[in-house]
Image (cartoon, rainbow, N blue to C red):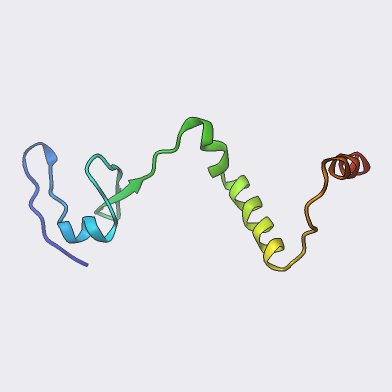
Length: 93
């Protein structure tokens, strides 16, 4: 979707409602602004609580993806009783 907007004082623009709705953007959404090949690129940024940031690391997300693939292929075992899980962990050492 392409729309035309006018640059106003202090570098302000209004993003058309159709685009806001399409991207589900609301007031106070943080946007990363970059210049790429002579174009202005706005990227919506999702704020993540500091205590949850570990989950969104590239390594963790790759591990999550691999785990889900194993689950989807049925390559997992059923739930362990606590004692069995601890025994299994001891065997792995």
